[in-house]
Length: 73
Image (cartoon, rainbow, N blue to C red; front, side, top):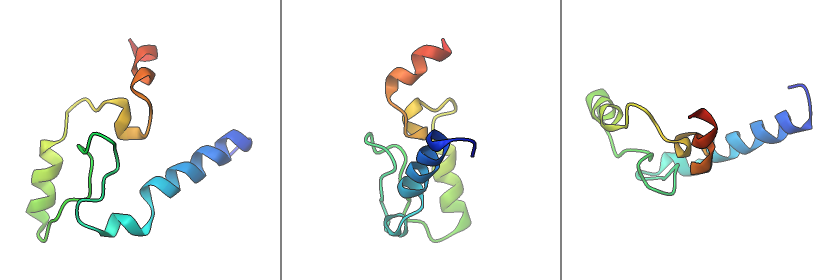
């Protein structure tokens, strides 16, 4: 981390993706519900879920607003 903005970003990421909620089946990481904690018991269950995810994820996969994609076009 080089400044207060880096610190703020890392804290936000940790609060979003590393919390007690992720232990619950169906915990949503995004508002669309595409990214969630699957109710899986076997490795293959997780692999199926991962294979079902979009090949080119939208900005929401990273906690960003959909307009974030505008700058990559």
